[in-house]
Length: 335
Ligand code: LMR
Image (cartoon, rainbow, N blue to C red; front, side):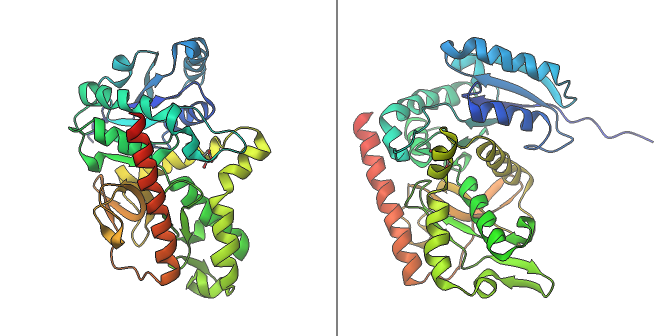
């Protein structure tokens, strides 16, 4: 009996790897939660020179964890070295927000990082490298990468709204007292900010009576339009208030979910939310990084088409698009 050819290791870059999300995500990646339990990985970890010692400590811990899928670890503060040959780039590096700030208050601090990383990606990453922006403001950082990395295909740049998507599933599961794994097809529209529109109007939940629309099961329109929406919109701020630092394990977990579904595909009948380059679907202006419902197959995402959008949803979706236009002009002025 011939054994299957072992898979070649995939190089995965994590920036900001000495930070809180970085610390959580490298272990998840090295345990196969991002690329699958049979996919060996080589981790490239980047952080600032002043975090070099801490980053080396993370490298030591990864070795000490004796992880069979982990075939190599690079810890560096050199961008060129970090981006060299990577097929997946998880961009977390940047200032996190503190209590009382909006994510867009980070534009001035963070967009310049992504201008410089656009060239590193173009010059050093593998040609079809898949990128997910986690650092805030995530959508606008993705746009900066696109603008300053013209040779990177737009379809390869995405930003993380899976954290909001998972938060939405979590809120519905709590409300209905069902397991979160039985809820699906929530949608996050727009910006990863407090203007995002968490939409449960197409979501379903599995119950003893079969799969039912969440709308019908919750039977509380006011909750779906108000409390649910604001809880998900404000969840990042609520975690910062409670932890005195921004979400880490849930962000790391969501980034793994995002890349896993992108590369390995979404389950049949299920969509997820991803911030992607708008093609004008649902009247969203082209050329913004906007969160849509997507399905993924063979490493490509596509926007779910044909969903009914009522006036309530339309106005929320437009408000978030307007904020993204505004962030775009602030970022471009700075750069
Ligand atoms: C989150 O959503 O938890 C992160 O984007 C951190 C933040 O600033 O809210």
